[in-house]
Image (cartoon, rainbow, N blue to C red; front, side, top):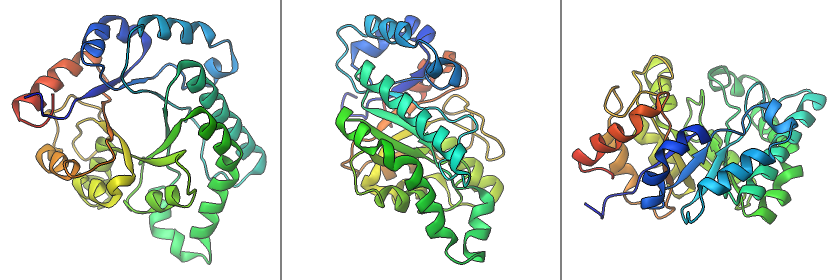
Length: 272
């Protein structure tokens, strides 16, 4: 079974305390969730970084963080608010540099409303891309210098291609694509988007990161794998030919579901 894809997980440091041995035994990909909130980023986050580095002593896996996102649109049309988003992205990248993290998850700006309306206004698609560039261009060099890739995660995205083309527009290793399986399942079930495996196919080797969570197509459940309606065999079949080595990060609402999710996927012959 060692030829199966190796799973990683997203968790705060308090959970890493209990799952450290599991993470370090195989140097699994890890995503830390402690650096999302403005209060943390505006404060002294060095103690959290020091704690993480202590817990991860001897770790040789790929480390990332979930970047800030609450109330932050990468395509905010207000220049003052856009400057705040840029600052938050820079703060997240500074954390990455301090941690030695090489990925930061950021949220796609595309909404369900955008899907129906971007072609209803002249140049709206180009304006959306331009606004995101206004937000991220000032931190691209910071990300490149730190060896960090910002991965654009689908949130409401009904169109699997829009954020992929957005990532391409930067022509930089600092921007790539992420998929959240539960978000895609929500979009499929509630807004008529394609099924989850189509998101993987459309991303192709742009895909560097995937949040694995189960859902029912109605809400963003973050259930343990096997508890929802995601077609996991189709998802892993779509992942199999990729050469981009996306990080397979279980992102569950209840950390108690991480090991059972690993067991479920291993029993299905999909991942370990």
